[in-house]
Length: 232
Image (cartoon, rainbow, N blue to C red; front, side):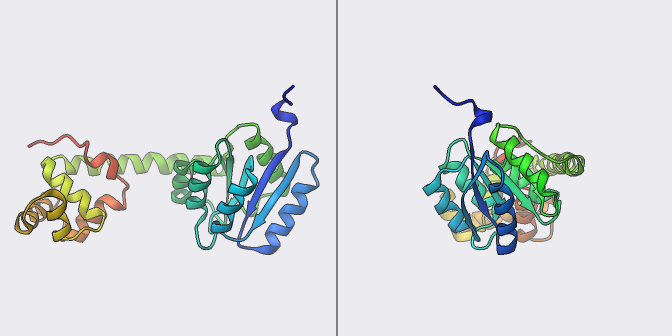
C-alpha cells in the first residue's frame, strides 16, 4: 500500500556556497521527523552529481552557487530527476533572477534571511507539490514580469519591418555570429550578409551591429524573433 504523500519523508539536497549556512539549515531540517537531508554540497557541479546519486524530492539551492549557478543547476537537475521540486534561496529579491529561475523550473523561492521556520514549511509545501512565493516578493515579481513583457512587445513591434531573412540574420547576430558564419549558415555571400546587417541597423534605428544584437539578447526574444510577422 502506498504511503500518502503528506506522510512520506522529504529527501532533501542542500547546496550553498557558505558552509555555516548549510550546517545551520541541515541541523534545523534534520530535527524534523519528516525531513531528511540526503546530501549537502557547496557548488552546482556537486549538486548535480548528488542529485543523480540520491534522487531527492526537494533540492534547496543557493542562487549564487560556484561553478554552476543556482538557476543553471536547477534546470539541469529538473531534467535529470523527474518530479523533484526546487527551492531557490537568494541573497536578495532580484526579480530578474527570480523570473529566470521560475522559467528554469523552480517551484519556490525564499531570501536567505528568512526565518528557519519558514524554510521548513516551504520545503514541506514543495514536497506536497505546491508552489511557494512569499508575499513580500510576489507583488514585485508580478510587476517585473508585466513590465518585461510590455518591453518585449514594444521591441517586437520594432522588429516588424524586418524581412524574414533579416530576422534570421539578426537571430544569428544575437548568438554572436560574425559575417562569415552568417554567410555560411544562410548560404549567402559575405557581402549579402553585410547588406542585411546594414539594413537591420537602419530599420531598428540603432548605431551598430552590437546594439542590434543586444536588443534581442538582453530582452530574451530569440524564440519570438522568427515568429514576428513581417511587413515585407
